[in-house]
Structure formats: structure tokens, C-alpha cells
Length: 215
Image (tube, rainbow, N blue to C red):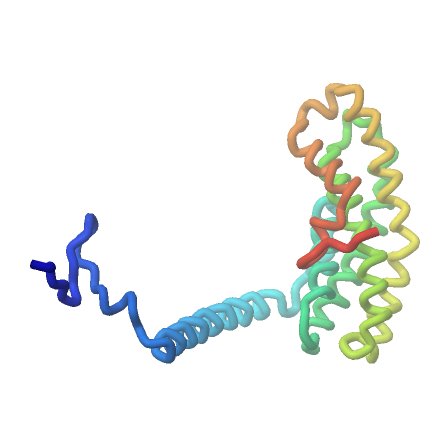
């Protein structure tokens, strides 16, 4: 006698409803669409909340790692797909302006003239990574006229920062011998120093959204 199966069967973790495994295609699609809508709503709510936090933010910092972080964010912001909103472009301009002012203040403090024992490699290398993004930011803004064409002030702000991009090489070249010789200033934070140096040398994957740009 062949066994018969009802809509329910008992598995290791309790009762399993077999009918749920064989939903009609349209019903499955409807459930998936509803789930996608809920996820999109939650994502939009999170974006809106973060956007409100970013309004009227004071972004200027003299900390090299903080400056690098602002440049990371500016680079990713200008790569976001789709049409840029006015708030996105305004935020990008605020970030670039803050980087320019903060970088001038940082250099005025002559921290890069101090001996290695009075400096932190990973913080300076964070700035070096951020400065690597400047060329990409300038390239995206100049080519994407649909999103950025009417914001001449944004182009000027980026243009003011571009002369500082060579500072990235200066920082990397300073710390490279310390990494090779494993001196005390490097070994004090060896793990994070190594990660930051590697990223500064090959930054595209870190700075890009999606597939990294090929040389």
C-alpha cells in the first residue's frame, strides 16, 4: 500500500507545510514583490534619516585620517548611480570644501616635517588614500554633465584640491622605508599600518563602487 501525504509532514525541526513549497508562479512573484517593496521602504527610510543627519554638517578637520575619510566619501558619493539630487551635489561640494580648508590647516601645522617617532603612519596613509581619489572625482564631475554640469562652484572646489594630490606620493614614500626596515615607529601599529600602506599603493578597489577601474 502506497503511503499518502497530506499537506503537512514532520521533519527534524517540526511541521513542514508542503503546500508552501509549491506556490503558483504568480503568487510567488507577488510575495517576492511585496518583500522587495518592504525592503526598499526600509532602505529609503534609512537613507532619509542619514540625509537629515548630514544636513548643515560641519565637516572640517585637521586630522589626516579624517581628511582621508572625507575624500573616500566624496569619491563614492560622486560615483553613486542614477540622477544626483540637489542635496547629494550640495553635500559633495561641502565635503570638497571642508577637505580643502582642513588640508591647508593640517599642512600649516607642519606635521609632515616631524620625525617618524612623532607621527602615526596609518593616519597619514589614510590621507594618502583619500588623495588618490581626487583624479577620479575630477574625472567624474567633468564628464557627467547631466549630474554636475550646472555646479561650477563644485568644479572650482575640486580644482583647488588637485594640486595637493602629489602629497599622497610624498606620504607613501616617507613610510615605505620604515615598513621595509620594521623600525619601532612602524611596528607599534604594524597590522593597521600594513593594511593602509597596501591600500594606498593599490587604492582602486577600495575607492570604487562596483567593479574597480582598470589602469
